Length: 591
Image (cartoon, rainbow, N blue to C red; front, side):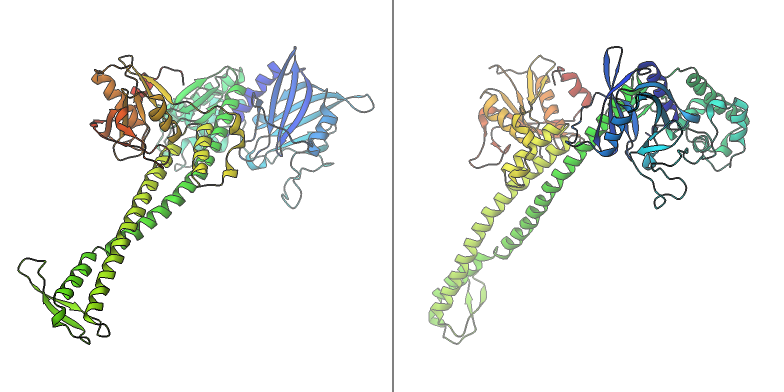
């Protein structure tokens, strides 16, 4: 994932093709460590992003728009003063390092033509963007590095600019195959080959180190001591092939994508062959690859953060409900013997002539049980026999009322748990921010979060649509993404004769088969609809998932029930195993 020397070299080639002699029209600073240059060349404007972010330092063209602060930061104002209207006359990379020099020619306040250097250092948490004058003096930087931060190298206005400390690595562009062979041969037997390459040569990321090993040895997991002399030659040879291509400006920008997890994984300026389980997307522009990677990863990070926030709220309420359920079950257990109190009251009343006030117990025959066994009933000696009977009747009534109340509360609590688990499943399955915002709005309406925290921006956003599939028999199938959509599909969109599917006893989406009034729906469509219901449920990764189905007229929403919660009758059950390939095959491509 690091933006290594190879990627930087590819960027320099691309910039020399696209922005050499271009004019800097505008400069913005949307983030404290990020700049946007609007560059015009040959009648076309492009957005160049420069970032000194500790997590994602980079430079590339971008199509992403960000809002800018009302008052430009001081560094932005300084760059506008020195560079606005200037022309980029050279783009270079020193010594294959992760550094880019933009040489910019502009006029100063006196009307004199000057040349300044904008330096972009792409080095993790040490990344920086530095403006240097023609004498090598630092005019300013986006990050100031004083003696209190680093005793090795300071980056402050007025100081001479010096390159970051050398790591004593060799420039692979200048190395022969024999030199590479000699360096690898001298390394410790216990060092992995890919790590040896990364440790000894400038600008090579771990990804490329592994790729060199894979191409040479068909495996990237070898140690130096395991290699024969011929194998080391293979490694040196493959490394030379890659860097010969780089010398000649032959790049193949690629994006590595995990289809199953639906996330971008890595990028490279050369082709990557080592992963069988990752999809490879190629592009002629390394900038385009970087823009796609970082925008998608940014979206993934935001999605992950928003999902985490919602899951935290949902799990907190689930824990509360489950603790309450445990107490309710305990309370029901405590009053489960309430019939004994009524029996004691009846037996005391039937034997009241045998009981005297002051007795602390009485033994009587229990005529409610077969054989009339003798039972000992504790008595309060301070109370009369009739008052003792009444005491047991009161305890029975109290326990009976408690059992009724707890049972009702427990039923409501179980419904709430079912609802929260369904929302939890929806958050896990959400694929974009809009879906998460809709879920957030829903649980806000249910009182789980403050209404103030609802997305204001969602007011003018059209609600997302349910998923649409077409069975192999040509029949339309619709699947809800969240409880609001589930309610819409089942209660408004579907007709009485349509078929309704839902996983049995586990959270999942409502799935509707549009029958068009036909009574005989092919078994193929029934099984495919069931597979969709299982795939878009908590049982996605299970096998033989039970899915109930019935006509929509048999599905009802109880009064006061939470979104997505329904009851149904007269249903059948089928067992299916979710299959992602089937889901892809049934998708008509309109979503």
